Amino acid sequence: MLTIYGVYRSRASRNYWLAGELGLPFASVPVLQARRLDDPLAADAPLNTQSPDFLAVNPTGLIPCIDDGGFVMTESLAINLYLVRKHGGTLSGQTVTEEAEMLQWTMWAATEVEPHAVRIILTLDANAAESEQGRLAIRGAAKALKKCFRRLDAHLAATGHVVGDRFTVADLNLAEVFRYAMGQPQLFDEAPNVKAWLAACQSRAAFKAMMAVRQTEPE
Image (tube, rainbow, N blue to C red; front, top):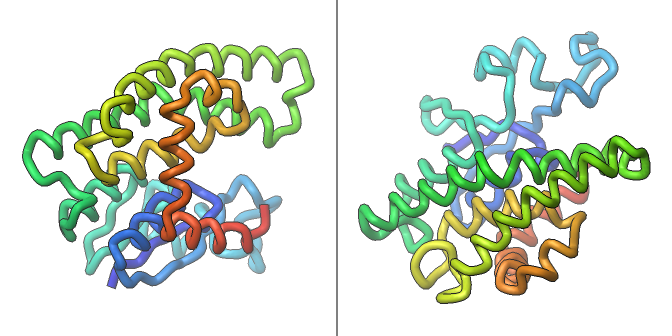
C-alpha cells in the first residue's frame, strides 16, 4: 500500500493528483507544515513536519514524502516520476527519449519556473502585494516568468502537450508548478497555448477530485 504523507494544501497535491490518475490505492497521512502552527511541538499539536513521529519517517522534515512498501522517498516531482515509471501506462514514458524529455521538463519547471511562481504565492499569502516591497517582488517574479511562459507556449503549439501527443506525468508536473502563477492572469493571456493547456489539465477528473479534498482543508 502506498502511503502519502502531507496535507492536500501542499506540494503533496501533485502526488494525490497522480495517484488518482493512475488509480492507485493509497493511505493519506495529513502532515501539516510546522510554520502554520504557533507551537508545532506542543503536546496537543497536530502531526506536523517537526513532530518526532513524522521525523522518524522522513528526517528531512519536508512534505510530501511517500512510503511505498518500505521505500521512503521525498521530493514531490521526483515522486511522480518514480510512480509512473513503476506503474506504467500512458502517463509514463514509452521510450527512453520520452522518459528523458519528462525528466528535462520537470527539472526545468522546478529550477526555472517554481522559484518565481512561489515568490508570487508567498507575497499574496502574506497580504503584502500592496506594499512597495511586495509590488516589486511580484513584478520581478512575473518578469522572470515571461520567458518561461514564452518557451512553453511555443512548445505547446504543436500538440498541446509537454511530451508526445497525450497527457503525461510531464503535463501534470508542470501544471502543478504553473498553477502557482495563476494570480498573475496577464501571463496566461500573453501565452494562449499555456492558458488552454492548463485549463485542459485542470478539467481532468483526477485533478478535480484532488482539489475537492483540498478545499475541505483549512487555509
